[in-house]
Length: 280
Ligand SMILES: [Cu+2]
Image 1: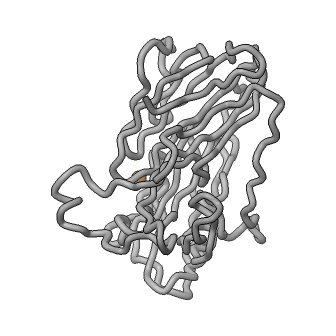
Image 2: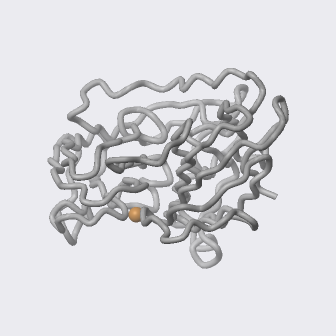
C-alpha cells in the first residue's frame, strides 16, 4: 500500500512538513482522547486515533535530569486507561501498570503522575491498560530527559517509528487487536509505516551538520532494520543508557519493539542528495 522508506533527512533546502496536529492546551494535563488525524496519504480517509492531547505521537515531554515530571492524566476515552513511563527508574506507584501498581483510570476520571527523573536519556510513555489495542491506536509519546551538559549537536531530534494496520478503504484501524493468527505468529504488523505520525516524514539538514537522532520503536510487534545512507556516526546510547564506548555505525541498525537507540551522525551526503535511514 505504501512507501517502504521510513524517513529521510533531505539535505536539499526543502521545507519541513507542517505538523498539522493540535498542541496541548494545558501543559499540566495529558488527555487520552479520540480524534481524527491524517495518518494515511492524502486521498485516503482520516483515521480515528486514540492519542494524548490529540496528536500522534503524543506531545514530546522533555525535562532536565533531576526534575520531576508532573502530569494529570485525564481519561476522555470510553474505556479505562493508565500511563506507563517506559524505562524510567520510578516509584512503583507511578509506573502505570493497571492491576499491578495502580487501578486503571475509569472514563471521565483522572490520575496524577508525579515522579523524579534520575537519569538522562531517551524514554517513552504509553498506555498500559488494554495495551494491545490502546498503544496500537496511538496512545504513546516520547519522554526525553536532558543531560546537564548535552553533547554538542546541531539538531536533537526524536524519531518515533511505528506501524499501523489500517483498512485502506475506510482509513480506520482493523479492529481485531487480539487476532489469534497474528498473536500466534509474529504479532500485529501494520501495513503503513511512519515516523512521528507521518508516513512521509522528512527532516531538513545540511551537509556537515551533526545530528542526535533518538530512535524509538513504538510498534507493537515490528522489528525495524534500518540502513544509514549519507550519514556517518555512532550509536551512543541504547534504551536510555549511554554506551561506555560509542559504536561506529557500520551495519544495519536493528530496533525491537519498545527499544530506543540514540545516534550521533554527521551528514556526509552532498547538498541536494537524499540521506537518511532506510528500510532495505
Ligand atoms: Cu513499555
